[in-house]
Image (cartoon, rainbow, N blue to C red; front, top):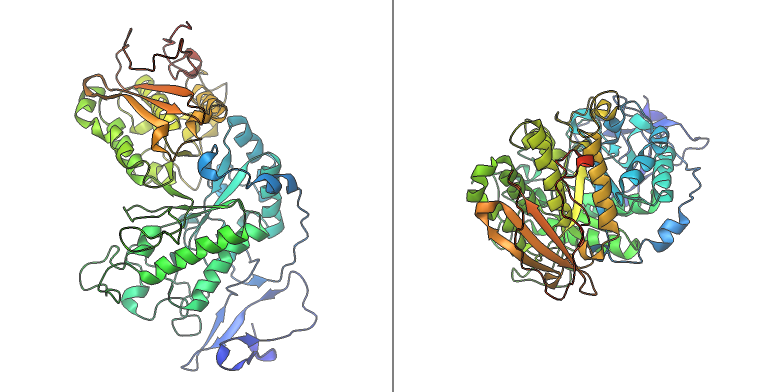
Length: 545
């Protein structure tokens, strides 16, 4: 590389540099050759590059889009119903390992059909923006404006999104504005000084991941990130952004000991700059991109994550303005309950009921995500106690409870067919478990069929999603049967039509079990039973009246 042939010129105190290079065509490689304050030079990728070389190569590539979209009907109706009053069932996917070796265009031939068959309304893609280390799963981004070249070019990624939309499937994307890696060809000390990161080393270094945190107090950094959020929604027709690691952004003392952080101007631990950035990002995305939803992965009890930015809460802050928030508390408590042997679950009954104490404080998604099936945590079915038959029975019952519980659903790939092994980004789901030649249909294909039927019942039953955020749309009928390991509740739609959900988390069959249901309903019909033989169960069910 020789940067001396095309010197850029500074536009005064604006901080902007410009250059016109004639004859540069699509596909040309380029970098910035920057002279640091100490006189040394550094080669950098373009922070705004829309296309990059395939890692480990780091050049930026001149790009012009030639994709012609075919999803006009999808976009025209995307904003018809507010997301919290619509069905929202999400299949989380790590594209490089869903079917290892497939490109964006090859994925477009398989992923939409699979997701549509299972009945999910959306897919959530783990980070797609360019990243140097595949083992980070995309969460350490260097190319914020470029989809990873590992699977193809930007137009190929658009082709995949187009195919999903034409199949009636929304596309959410993990977005990582919390931090960035220290690679010396990317954003870190871009011109030899702290530009994107905070100038205070205590604020800049992320203690958990060895990365750098953005300086949200700089308007140039805020503009870079807010524009990036809008860019993915407008340029790639993304339907939603799931914002990663929000808690690490909100708290100055996140994972830091006393002496490792400095308080804000009011003496508190809240990162006021990050709060203002998230509010600006959400307000801008919702204003510019009708029908798009933002989702927060926020693991604390921060007040007003899904409250409007102009509504102040008890803390004095306006809401952060997200549309939905991952319910990490529900996930942790319910998985903890399920991990116990049934005979011990009576002592942990509250772990399944406590979520309803705060269920309406935010607009929630119930996430069984990639984070819960890696690093020794085991797959969902392997978390369950008992032998293989009992593990699958617990797995199915848990999914039924999850789909009936207030909140939207998210399930990571492989868990829809009870994969026994943890996920690995190197090989992905064990698809051979669905091969008819492998074993009994009831084992893995039965669980997959249950997920398909859960989604089908969910979609045609407004009581399960229409009033997710209204306390009047829920009523316990059995909430204190700790000795029985039984939970039962009613969900209501806008017409007050009830749906009764009953979960029995014991291995005991309970005949003639009394439930306090409305007496104005003449008869109840069984919509779905996770214990049917076709799902791998014992086929004990309720007869129709």
